[in-house]
Image (cartoon, rainbow, N blue to C red; front, side, top):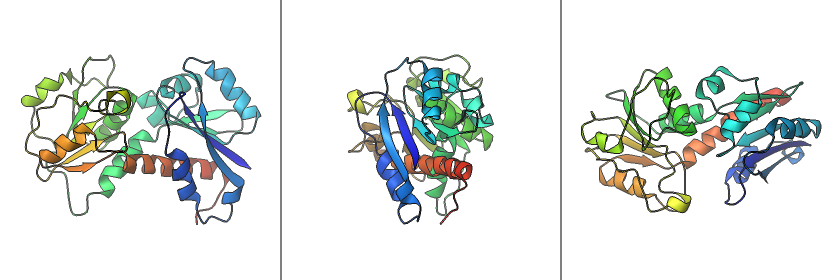
Length: 258
């Protein structure tokens, strides 16, 4: 039996278990795989916890806020993307321990690109709302592909790839983007009904993406649609993240595609 899990804070729910069940459906070996959520308090001794998990035979983990940075700090074997982003949402078992991956970057990019159809970016410019761990991954993915990234946030943070971080109100003077991404927590959980205070330009032909998801469209998504944008919620990104994580896990386990 290969066991996989989601490292999350207590409370709330996740769609990750059902995503993996869907991803594994029909595979002849799927009965030998399990995926479960693990509620863990922030600030635990991750080095010790991960050693115990390795000894217990776990095969891989996803990690979500608030554990992404702490897990990254606890595991020194990191892919170049995880190293650049400074956070990990995917751990792959190795012979000696764990390796940090970050699938937020590829998950974001694949989710947006797969929705294009005949669309091609006109300005190669993105407004990125937020400057946390997910925002760092998205900024990395975009800069690697030659996009100009304009960052808007409530409070600047150090070492954000050298990018200038502006207030949300600065969107009033910002040049038009191909895409606006909400990588803040505004609009979800305890902050449902809220949205970054963006001054929306006409976005007919452009895009907006919420990096997280909920049962109903967020205020950000509603405002983006009113501005004329094509809107994606966080589900496509989550699905692509799961696929990338499974690529890493199945490669490690020597499991063939089907």
